[in-house]
Image (tube, rainbow, N blue to C red; front, side, top):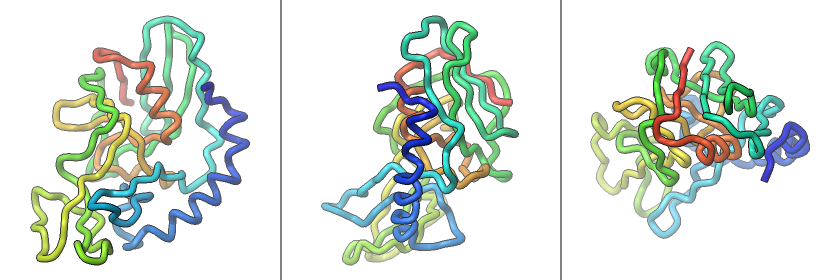
Length: 209
């Protein structure tokens, strides 16, 4: 299905409502927001809903389904946008949220090293109470944080993951607060990460500026 500017515009009221509803599920304001949209424990799994952006998305669009040519992605950290080209023709733009200051997205010439549609983080996630499902800590780095008694660790979901560095940085579906906020990855709205995922292959160049 074509994702167009008009499609995003028509969805803005729905997106705004979804953002309002999902805000009720963010248990620890002022901490990490990269798991915004993660609901309560259901059958010992995370109930993941693709998070709506914090601000209306009047930028993202896709018009590349009928365009041929080699793909190329350019990431602008200054503009917080990703640009998708086919054969040198711009066919899509996506809002992004790149790495925050202390977890910067590395600039330079990269390429897609791996594609994993159902990827989860091996490092970041949340601690939830086993009995109640309540979030104890929503900003866990399992390399440093010990699982408390009575808690369980859930890896952060990263749908449509497109790895660009060997140490784990990639593009994927994620929450967009309107500014750089990730641990280094490039978060995108789910419709756009899906289009990018479908139209890249291992080896596709990615330029981060």
